[in-house]
Amino acid sequence: MLHYARRTRLVLILPVSVALLVGAVAALPVAASAGTTASAADRQYVALGDSYSSGVGAPPYTDGDCKQSKHSYAAQFADANRAMSFGFSACSGATTDDVIAYQLGFLGPDTKLVTITVGGDNLGFTATLEKCIEALHDSTCKAAVDAAVAIIETALPGDLKQVYGDIVAKAPNAKLVILGYSQLFAQSFCVEAPLDEYRRNLLNNAAVQLNQAIEKTAKTYGVFVPVDDLFAKHRVCSDDPWLNGITAVEDAFHPNLAGYTDGYLKALDAVLHSTAATH
Image (cartoon, rainbow, N blue to C red; front, side, top):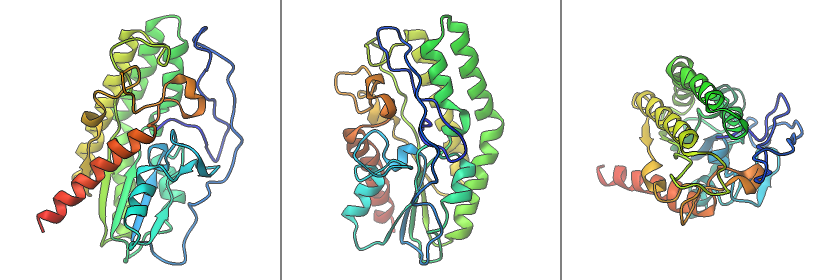
C-alpha cells in the first residue's frame, strides 16, 4: 500500500530514526515496472495490484523494481496451484492508473482467476503516514488523514470502478477477487510505531474507510475479501505482529511472511474454497 517504487518519480521512504521520530529521508531510483508488460499468452491466474500483492515486507525480492516476493500471498498461492499458469504483475507503489496502464497484459479469455489489492497508493498514504510520524502537532496529522479520506469519498470509487471494469473486460471468464487492507496499529505504544494513540486511531480509521469504499465498489465486479479481522491481534506493536514496524525501513508497515501466509493467503484460500463448495 505504501509507495516505495514508482515509474515516474522519486519517492521518499519513511523516516527511520526511532529516537528522533524522524530521520534521514532516502529516495529510490526510478525504474520501469518489470513483470508488467504485455504477454504473448494468457495466464490462468494473474496477480495484480500494489505492494500488498507484490509481497513488500517479506524479502528476498525476485524483482527489484516492483519488489515481487516469492513469499507474497500471490506467489504462494501460485506455487500451491501449479496446474494454473501464473502471471505476476503486481508492483510496489501501483495506483489504479498504474494497474490499467502496465499490469493487464497477462489477462485474456483463458484467465480463470485474478487477485488484486489496490487503492492505498491513490490516497498518497506514504506521505500521510510520514506526516503523522513527523508532525509536531496532532492537527498536522489530522489534516493529512482528512485529505486522504476526502479522496476515498470522492475520486477513489470512480477509479476503482475503472480498474475493475477494465479487468473484467479483458478477462471475462475470470473470477475477480479483491482483497482489502489491515489496520496498521495496535493500541499499545512501541518503538516500531512512534505515534500516539490519537494518531494511530486516525490512521486506523482511515484504513477502515478505505476498506468500506473498496467493498462497496467491488460487489459489482467480483468478490471482496476482508483481511482486517485476521490481523486484529497481529498489528504493529502487538505481541505477535504480522506487519513490519518502522525499523524495517523500506518494508515498514507491510505484512511480514506470517501476514502474507496466515493473513492474506488464508483469506484467499477460504473464499475460493467457499465458492467452490457452493458450485
